Amino acid sequence: MENAKVEIRRYGPNDEALLFGLIERAGEEWTEYCKGSGRRKYQQALAHSLCYLLFEEDQLCGYARCRDDDGFGVYVYDLLVDERYRGKAYGRALMERVCKDFPEDTVYVMSDVDPYYEKLGYQREGSIFIVRG
Ligand SMILES: CC(C)(COP(=O)(O)OP(=O)(O)OC[C@H]1O[C@@H](n2cnc3c(N)ncnc32)[C@H](O)[C@@H]1OP(=O)(O)O)[C@@H](O)C(=O)NCCC(=O)NCCS
Image (cartoon, rainbow, N blue to C red):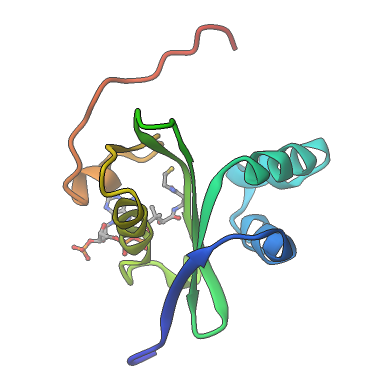
C-alpha cells in the first residue's frame, strides 16, 4: 500500500488478543508462546517486559519485546513481523524505536537469525550458552 500510515506504540493489556493472534499466525516456532501453559507464561513475560506494536493503518504487523536491565542495557528478546508485511523495513523500524526510547542505553538483541541483524549493520557482542537445558 502506498503511503500507508505506520504507527509504533507501547503494548498494553488490552492488546493481548491482538498480539496473540499475530503470534499464532507465525507458525510452529512460536507455539511455545501461545499454546497451553505457554500462553499463560508469555502473558506474564509480557506484563514484565517493554513491548512495542507496529501498525499499518489499523492492522497489527509486528512487535518487539524487550527488557530494561536498569542502566546496563536494554535487551530485545522477541522480534516478529507478520509474513504478509515483511520487506517493508518494519523489523528495522521496531528496533529503531527501541533505540530512540533508550538513547542513553546500549540496546542488545537476542538473535535467532544472525544474517538479518548483520544486514541491519549491528555488531556482534558475545554469545549465549545453555548452562542447563
Ligand atoms: C526477521 C524479520 C523480523 C524481518 O522483518 P522485516 O520487517 O521483513 O525486515 P526488514 O524489512 O526490516 O529488513 C531489512 C533488511 O533485511 C533483509 N532481511 C530480512 N530478513 C532477512 C533475513 N532473514 N536474513 C537476512 N536479511 C534479511 C531485508 O531484505 C532488508 O534488506 P534491504 O534493506 O536491502 O531491503 C521477519 O522476517 C520475521 O519476523 N521473521 C520471523 C521471526 C524472526 O526470525 N525474528 C528475528 C529473530 S529473533
